[in-house]
Length: 97
View 1 (tube, rainbow, N blue to C red):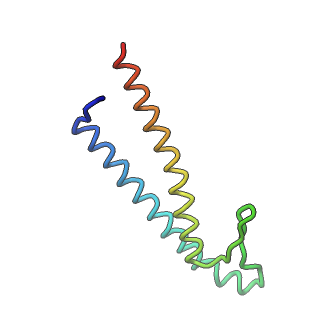
View 2: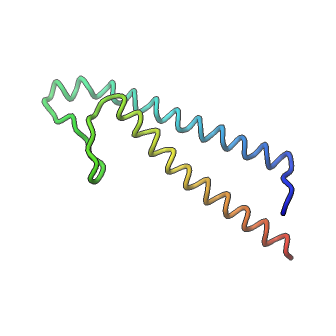
């Protein structure tokens, strides 16, 4: 069992802050995109339904904000978990030598 140093704890906290900021930013950008495309959809008579594989949803600002936040959270979450696993695995291997 290893003891975390102050630098490791601070680094994890910083990654957590960056994660929250990135997810929040994508939610805000999704909302902005939804507000911008809403009048264009109505003016052109285009369908206001989007799909992601078998899932269909209305292209509203709120739905696009949720979509942006969820996709960013999943993508970054998988990346950060993989990086954390690799770091722990590497540090455990180097301490055995």
